[in-house]
Length: 322
Image (cartoon, rainbow, N blue to C red; front, side, top):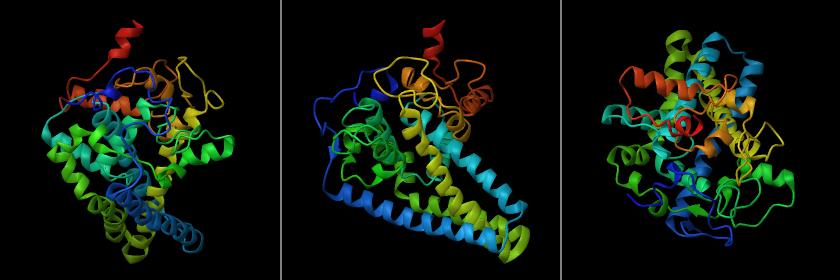
């Protein structure tokens, strides 16, 4: 395993702050082209689909089926990002067998936030250069490492504008473990099938089974495409609101970045909004450091451990604070 692949599992100081384009960043070539193609297709479906969903909801109405499928799929894929993609695949906060690994890769991919390979690479790069030049989605620097003077422009960049940066993370530098993992790479190669399953097929099938064609259309638009976009925006709040340097939320630990813990984001992301805690102890499986800090994703991991479905759950922060 390369040192860079392990970087997000340890407490490290930001590096590369003295250079605008640090190692592990690509600015041209097929990887960059593929990134833009994926983004154009994904957002080209989600944004018009979300607009159509809102028009449908106001003109045709939605019922309990659409609402319950929205909540169910939102919950599954939010855990897919928080438990599976973030804490398992990026930080290796726990271990599991191949069946559970495949399940985690599936629900992570069904979040429609890019492939396992791309998400892991981007997030490890984010940790290595948190709120410094080289960070993928900081509100303080653009993709080329230029500091934002405008607060609004920086927040918009962190909230989603970073997707259109020319600069792209090199998986060969940040995610060699994922490239060597046949299960993770299977889901990376077949990601569009899992996107379709999440955003169209599962909501549509449930809607048709319960209420026929009308409910099927409502579920595909509202519980599928609109839900996928809403969840992407909720996850992006971690990049913007939770890197506000105390403007929103609070800082339990003084770190060399702008991370905060923020309540609304924490609720929407099942615990990922405890971001200052996370950057202090990046490998921890459970992020709550007080009774009022709700970490649903962490509770899910602990429950899976009790059931024997995962093991070697990392709790280094608990030992550090004891």
